[in-house]
Length: 265
Ligand SMILES: Nc1ncnc2c1ncn2[C@@H]1O[C@H](COP(=O)(O)OP(=O)(O)OC[C@H]2O[C@@H]([n+]3cccc(C(=O)O)c3)[C@H](O)[C@@H]2O)[C@@H](O)[C@H]1O
Ligand SMILES: Nc1ncnc2c1ncn2[C@@H]1O[C@H](COP(=O)(O)OP(=O)(O)OP(=O)(O)O)[C@@H](O)[C@H]1O
Ligand SMILES: [Mg+2]
Image (tube, rainbow, N blue to C red):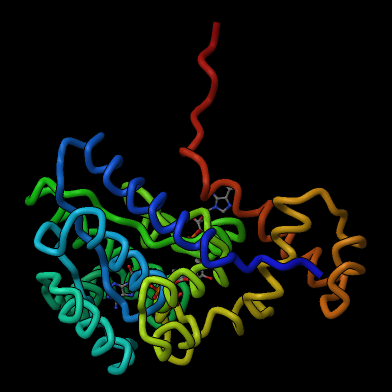
């Protein structure tokens, strides 16, 4: 078994490092402002807490962007986070915008994945509308677990200027969130992309995050083979490890700049 939990002193060191990272990225972009989408989920909540430490709440702009399938409790949690931290925020309804896309291309209606990804991309457009206007960075909320398996929408929630928590596995996101004072009910909420009704990450991925993290740490970030990873973990099958390995390999394109052909001599 592998233990990815961080000690209290490691958590404090991570917190300072990530806060410093946000300040550095803002400095490099010549701004002290940032925009971020608030979903009521743990990734955006932790990112918001860190961003307040880095830039100050008055320099942030939170966007709460409910859509047709957003759960009300998540949207009220998102507003709670903004209010609790004192972050100025707007609520933008994305339905009318997404409906316009579907009026333009009616064939996609009912296509859960295509429409769900359009929802994520619509939020990305709104983030950048505000960020361009306010000379602000768009803070991403992706964590290492999602990035490695490509569990995000290309140019949707993946369309951001930096990912402050991008080096933390999901269980470490939860741990750091608790460490910086995020209330337990937000830390323990089942993660959801919220792209269609009833969606949860763990159901779609076919594995719980603690096991996913362990497989990623041993087989993708670490040196163990598929068989050795399954043997080491005991409660994860070789087939599950192989499937995660495949998700990692198939999603390489999402972690790279789109390729162009080499120049001809
Ligand atoms: N090798 C390759 N080189 C270049 N492009 C490649 C490619 N393979 C596929 N593609 C292209 O990539 C595109 C498909 O990628 P994409 O549009 O992202 O779509 P896709 O990966 O199919 O779907 C997004 C996934 O991320 C999940 N998600 C989304 C948003 C948020 C969260 C969350 O955790 O909150 C999760 C969502 O539930 C779904 O499972 C297509 O255009 C496809 O042709
Ligand atoms: N309804 C929404 N309003 C505003 N932003 C959203 C909304 N839904 C998704 N987002 C943005 O997309 C990001 C990616 O979603 P994702 O589900 O991975 O993270 P999360 O909701 O913060 O955490 P969790 O994975 O625990 O649900 C969010 O962190 C947030 O920035
Ligand atoms: Mg979510």
